[in-house]
Each structure stands twice: as structure tokens, then as C-alpha cells.
Amino acid sequence: MTQNKLWGGRFTQPTNKFVEEFTASIEFDQRLYAYDIQGSKAHAEMLGRQSIIAVADAEQIIAGLDGILRDIEAGKVEFTVELEDIHMNIEARLIERIGAVGGKLHTGRSRNDQVAVDIRLYLRDEIDSVLAYLAALEISLIKQAERNLDVIMPGFTHLQTAQPILYSHHMLAYREMIARDTSRLKDLRARFNLLPLGAGALAGTTFPIDREWVADKLGFDGVTRNSLDSVSDRDFAIEFCSFASILMMHLSRLSEELILWSSASFNFIELSDAFCTGSSIMPQKKNPDVPELVRGKTGRVYGNLMSMLTLMKSLPLAYNKDMQEDKEPLFDSIDTIKGSLKIFADMIDQMQVKADNMRNAAAQGFSTATDVADYCVRKGLPFRQAHEVVGKTVRYCVETGKDIPELSLEEFRSFSGLIDADIYDYVTLEASVNARKATGGTAREAVERELARLKSC
Image (cartoon, rainbow, N blue to C red):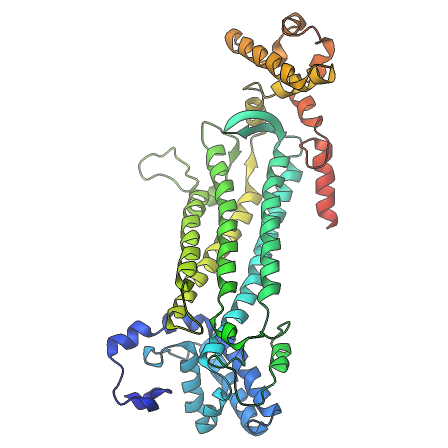
């Protein structure tokens, strides 16, 4: 019946049952219940302070909302599609609970600005939760670096052995990515922490509300400055999905390396059994399901970003029903990255490194060839000529089945007379790694400085 709708006065026919189900959002926006009540309580208190409604009415409304919150958390409330969304479900129950006074709550606001504040309150809390998960993953990466400070591994470009590096340096590279993700998320939190409540449906309100008081009450840094933009802005949700996509890209890159490193072909690491599964037919298998699944979920989060961008594309000002579709991709991205971060932090912390296998791999593929070129440059040979000398040296090694450190001095000197016996001080794995001492380099000294810096931050 139309009279059961809080907005039903204009209508003479009931809503089609399927339309009611099709347009309802309660199945997914019910997770906003605590934030809807939080925002409504602040709004009611402000209405009383401003003498827009009686203080006694405001107090009755707040007490009623507190009772509804307790009932919801106790599982005593069943949300209904007929009431469309979380806002109408709560308001209808408030009116049932305290009578007509409950209808005064919606004075000076619209569902348009109401949902805008609910989402911001919700996302703000979720961001704080995600920041904690990011910090935990950073700690796991740093601990891996500290525990394996002397482990040498091959550094790759094009997945070909390039130069020897410290495994700890490799772990700290991912820490840099996570640190940038953290910075991006903090920037977003600061940028969107403004109160949209008070914008009304689109044009503001005729009541003498105090938006600044509500903003302070709800922990916002200020208020939004344009009512049209306030109800139609979803940049913050798009930015979060963009952040989530970049984060998942980083986790996907690390996932790919963990998958490769745990394979028999690399055999660089051992993932804990707690994060792997077996095969239904091949008993010897230990599958890295967690990194594989995170790698797969990356595409899902990318899809959420594209959904949000496409949703908002070409929408005229101000609010449109299309925007109801903003919540599911946002909620899914939040759930996905929280799960991925939590499991990754634990998995990385428990990961075991096979140092000997890493070192043996680093000793193959002529990984110290660049050090020979640098040596020749220090002896006065222009780099391009030094590059050619080392290229011929490597070709000789391929033909003879030798690695660079195995060459005799006579063999070295057959490519350049500038090479002396001190060449052997430069072509070992340790010498190659520890020669790169500049800030950001892979030398043990540089990595130790970076770890000390991180501890002091």
C-alpha cells in the first residue's frame, strides 16, 4: 500500500512488487546501519540545539535510535525490501517505536545527503582498518629483510638473471610499494573527510541548521561547500577503488614472485602449509593457493574501479538513482583488500627462505658481468668499449662453459690488457652486492641503513 511508504503521499497506486525488489538496496546497504544511526543522532541533537524541534523531541529521537541500534546488534531487527534501504528501515522503526515524534528526524535533510554522510562515515572507519592491515604487511616485509640480511639472490630484468642483490633489498622494494599505498590512502582520508549533511536533496535547506557543529560532532574536518556537489560526489569512492586497484597490483606482483619462487624450478622459498593446499590427484603437490587467489582477485578489484567510473560517467547534477550502484563495488573492494592484506601479512611473516638455492642461482647467468665493465671503466676504458669487452668475455664463457669468476687472469687479459689480478676483488657475489653502497642500493651497508631509518620513523 502506498501509505506504507514514507514518501507515498504523492502516489495513488502501490509500487509494483518486482520494481520494489529491483530498486531496493537494503540487501547490501544494511551494513551502514551503525553509521546511519550515528549521523541521525548528531542531526537530531543539532535540530534540538537550533530550536528547529523541541529539545525533548530530539532526546526522545536519540533514545529511540539507541534502542534500534541495540536491537539490530542483538539480531532482533529484520530489514525489509518494502522499506527500500537502510535509511527508511531505521526511520520506519523509529516511528513505530516512539510515534509521530520520530517523523521529525528527517527535518532539514534528504536521503541524498543522508546516504552521502553514511558512506563517508563508513569509509572513514574502513580506511583506518585498512591502514592497520597495511602497517602489518610492512612489518612482515621488514622482518623478512632483517631475518635474511646476508642472503644473496639473483636480481632479474626481463625475468633473466641481471645482477646479484640481497634478498632483504628485494623485500624492502615491496615495502616501498606498500608505503606509497599507505600514503595514497592517508591523502584520500584527509581529502574526503568533509560533512555533506545539510545539502538536502540538492539545494540546501530553509531551516537554520548548524552544519559546522554536526561536522565537529561526527569528527569531520569541515563541511562541503556546494550542495549540488555534496549529494552527487562519489570521487572519494572512485579514489578508494583506484587505491585498491593499485594496492592489488602490488600484491599481484608479489604473488607472482612467490608462486615462481615456491616452484620446483626456482625452489627459493617455502610457504607455510597453512597457506597452501594439495592436489586431489597428485599427492606430491603443494599449491600456493593464497598468492594465486590474490593474483586472481586483482582483476575483480580492477572491475570494481571500472564499474564506479562507468557508473558516474555522464551523470547530470545532482543525485540520480544510478548512484545506488556505488555501494556494491565499493563494499566488495573493501572486503577483498582487507582479506588479502590480512592473509598476506601472516603468510610473509611465516615464509621460509632457501638461502643456498638463492645464492646458487645468483652465481649463474653471468650476474657479475656489469662489475667487470665497471672495473674496466675505473681503469680508464670508456664505458661503451668496456661494454663490448665484457660482451666478448661473456660469449667466451658461454662457449667454454665457465662463469666469469672462474676465468684465469690470462683469459681476462685476452679481452683487455687493463685487467689485473685485482679483478677477482670485484667479481664475487659479495663484492658485487656490497659495492653498491649508495642510498637505495643493495649493499648490506645500504640495506642496514635503510632498516635503521625505518625503525626510527
